[in-house]
Structures are given as structure tokens and as C-alpha cells.
Amino acid sequence: MAYSTQADILNQVDLDTLVQLTDDEGLGEIDAVVLARAIADADATIDAYLQGRYSVPLATVPDKVRQVSADVAIFHLYSRKDAVPENRRSRYEDAIGFLKAVAAGTIALGVNSPAAETSGNEVEVASNTRIFDRDKMSGF
Image (cartoon, rainbow, N blue to C red; front, side, top):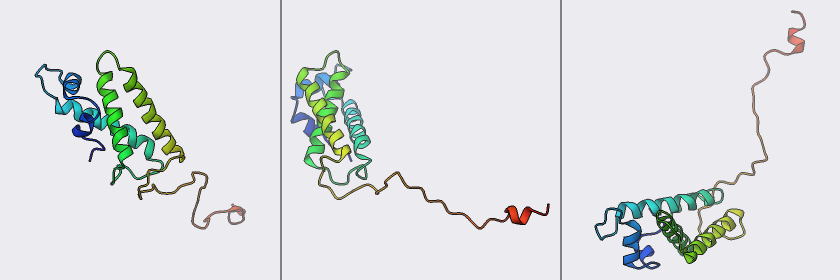
């Protein structure tokens, strides 16, 4: 399940702009494949930041994650063209800043899907009893 949809994108950009950003064939309509790829890329970015704290993909999508997905997807669509408008670049940078804060634990998403707790500082080793040791091998 994608974190954002075409409707979420259209809440931020108008139809003509979305057509211009996706229509590589000049058909005058939204290319759903191009749009889906941009959303998938945005969601992969989100998952990369969240995977240390949450089980991804998120089962429940918070509104903020939906907004971040749309902002990052729109940035990707603009970056396919020559120039990214400053407001879109700013929204993208804000989205990445939000994801970094979530990854650092300074912002919580409010969903109940924490990733498995691991400290990364502990090692547990188990083994069988030694078959050969210095005492057993001293006569050889």
C-alpha cells in the first residue's frame, strides 16, 4: 500500500502541473506509471528512514507520513524535469528533516508498530563443551 495517492498529489499541485510532470508521451493526461514510480520512490525513502524505529511498510499511515510521501514524490517528479521550484525544494528538505527527526527518536509517529528492539552493543555466544583441551591432549 502506497503512503500517498494521486488525490494526495492533486491536493498539492493542480491537474495541469501534474500532467506536465508525468506526461512524457505528450498525450495530455497524467501518466499513472510515472506517478506510481515517483510515489514508490518516495515511500522507499520514507521506509529507509523509519526502518530503524518502526516495522515498515507502515500498516497505518499517519497524516504526516502521507504529506511527506506526497512532498517527496512531487520533488521527484520535478527533478525529472529541468528545474525544481524553490517552494518544492523547501518542502522536500522539510520532509527529509522530519524523517531524520523520526529516525533519531526526537519525533514519534504515534503508530503502534515499533521495530524489534536491539541495542546493537550485545553479543551472545553459545557453544558445546570442548572435546579437546590442553589436559586431554597433553599425552600426545
